[in-house]
Length: 344
Image (cartoon, rainbow, N blue to C red; front, side):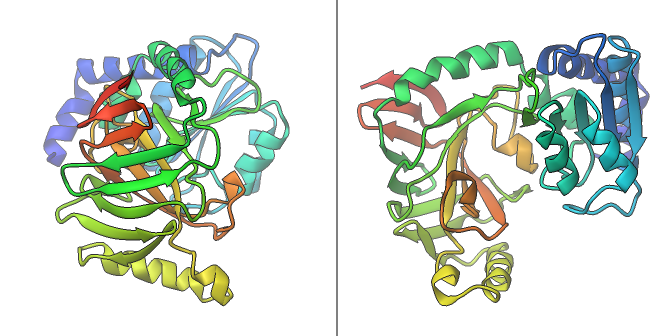
């Protein structure tokens, strides 16, 4: 979209109202903020329009709302200033609307350790995403739908994923399916990304074999030429030539330098698999939005230590595949990119 067109949208009454509508949904539906709670909104110059909408919506509910602007020098994964970190620890609610993710910072972790602060993070959010896409989902309905899937996963351990693009992969699960990424963040200590709406699971180590063809997006960038990955015993053994291949290999090679031989051999572990349930989301080349698109699937490579896995490398990379078919023994979950969730 041209800069002039963006400016026209930002200046329009419809745009202002849609921003406020989304902000109110986050404040009242997702976070369910109450009048006595303290709120900290952390934003930056690139996300300040979103920050202001969130501030206005929060101020309608509680007069204990504070907004802090991050310096322009803030980078992905780097810590916020000490005074921001200290404020985060003292709030009932923290909303992170910044270009660079703060989810894995010590500041966020320490705020969560209080057991009091609940946190919503929206790294890389744009005005158009905020006012239109997956962010505008009906999160109460999404919570109900995701909860309804739980019974389908019981005692189902074997998964098969295929796609028109060429994906053909099988694996067993190593933990329970997660169905709580529903956008409702109303309990102390919760941490959630928005937009939400995906179901995901930990593939049991050494059980995944076959081919994954990434044809939607990779690391928040739209795919022009599909990335074909061969998987043996849960680890990527070969990646076809594409615009992302060199970057992927260099990234994992850099991590491998500090590891022993056994650890280096599993850096390209497939750490997570999931599929989206958010009907308002579209594959646009944004990490958070792409992985919640209804009927699309995603694979995450790298660190699986959060599930108790062996690949504790502090790095993850993810890709989205289009129109998958996902089968669990006697159940079709997704058929050609459509959610079916039914027994065969």
